[in-house]
Length: 142
Figure (cartoon, rainbow, N blue to C red):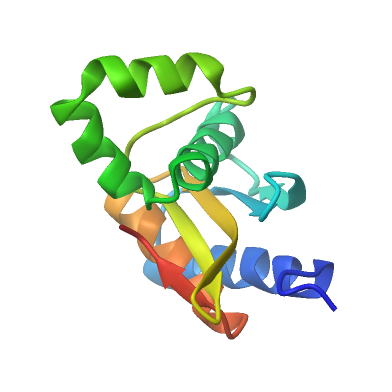
């Protein structure tokens, strides 16, 4: 069995959305990628704006692509803009270097990433972390 099977991906998705509702956040989009970067689960709540799912995907891609939570990727983007700009140009489904993209770890290994968008980046990150924890996996927000 995979460290991040469909059941766990859906549990992350559902728990992240539930965390958003519990906190009274704006409508969220959540994207869960497996360790290969393939889409494992995704959903957008009613009322979410059009581009939020792409932003969520870009946050997850940024985290998984560099092996760092997207919060840390954001810091890197300030310190090394040419490098992160080049990586962004190569990212097939977007690259968003702000908080809200969180690595999923199992036994210390990266097994996927979650991207959340819809509210303030710190709140998006909190929803992602809650979703990962609810699935019994470790969150690495950077």
